[in-house]
Structures are given as structure tokens and as C-alpha cells.
Length: 277
Image (cartoon, rainbow, N blue to C red; front, side, top):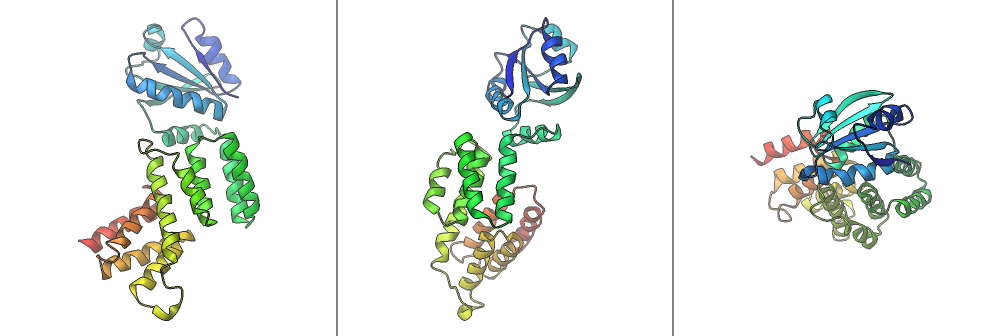
């Protein structure tokens, strides 16, 4: 497992440079008076345990020589050290997903990520019993991990276990962005699932807005997001007031599920703006 250590000018070579030949070292240059430093510290300590790297914490006020040697101008300043080579990481507070992306670039992978990969493989092969068992094991080991909570909640929605999904999502609070935004999107899936009971399930109303909306909802729940977005967009074009602007709001839910960087999100946000204005 990873570890977190205090590093000074006297032990830097042994605790950072030499250790980096055994496992990666993240050097966190910080200051006691720095607010963002205090926010970043518990995140890095948590990730050190999960990803099995060494977190070397250096107080720049107590170790000005090290800060000067490595050109630290602002804190927090995080550097990566692998096989004795020190590389720039990032300066300032980053959201947890971005820090994880940087760790991935270092070819670091956590047991949790391996577990989530196994869940995805089980779902892709149709072995839902295995997926459920794997989720249960992961949640016992990582009960507070937000990515796991979101993935498990989405799986529960797909199994129509809506109350269990809502209970999991309640753990994530509004200040926890962007996790809260994703939690709201999964709540949108719960709402879609409940709405289906009131929507037409046959072609007898083919062509109606209710039928078109039902098709879009089913496509969303089946993770066929492009078809869903096409259908929701068509409804926006036909009747913006339908379900109190429900089709546009549904598209926002899909955008949040996909993420801002997804090509479908970028494409259909533009199309939505063009349709509306």
C-alpha cells in the first residue's frame, strides 16, 4: 500500500529520489497558511493509499532550500518522481477526477479501477449476477468512493432497484462537484424509469409526442445516447412546452451522463442551441 511521509532537506534524497526507484513518489510542496494546500492534502493522502505511491509532503517555510532548488513559486505545487527523474505535475487545487487522470498518465492503476473494469466486463457479457457480486465486494472495500457509488447506483437503476439507487446517491452532497452533478444525472435516470410506466408502450400512438418521448427515454436507459438525443431534440423542435420543457431537460441529463468532453455532448449542445434560437 501507499504511504504519506514528511520530507525535509536532510532526507529528500533518501525518501524521494531513492524511493522513486521502487515506486512512484508524488512530492507535495505546501504551506500551513495555504488554504488550497489544506484541501488538496487529504485527497492526495487518500489517493496514495488507493494507487500505492509515496506521498512526500514538504513544508516550503520549513524547507526553503528545497523550494528554491525546484523553483516553487506557488503552492500547492505537486511534482512526480519516477526512477529518480523529477517532472512537473500541477500547481494549485485540482478536482479529484483531474488528479486521477494525471495518475493514469503515470501508468498507475488502483485495485478499485481494476474492479470497475471487471464489473464492466461482466455487464458486457451479460453476467449480471457477477456484476452485482463484484459491486458488493467493491463497496465493502471502498464505501466512500464517489465513482463507485455512481457506477453502482446506475447499475441498480438498470435493475429497477430504484430505492436502493436513491439511498446510495444520497451519500453524495451538493458541494462535491462534479460528483453531485453526475448524481443528479443518475437521479434523472430514476425519473425516466418511473415515467415509463405512464408512457405508451406500443405503436398505437406512433408519431405522438408521448410515443416519441417514450422511445427517447428507452434509448437513454439502454445507453443508446445518440438515438435518445436525436429523439429528444426532435421533440424540442416540435413543442418546446411539452412536459414543461421536459425534452430539453432530458437532453441536459444525457449531457451530464456523458460528460462535457464527450463528442455527442458537444455536437448536440450545439444542435440544441440552434433548434431553440
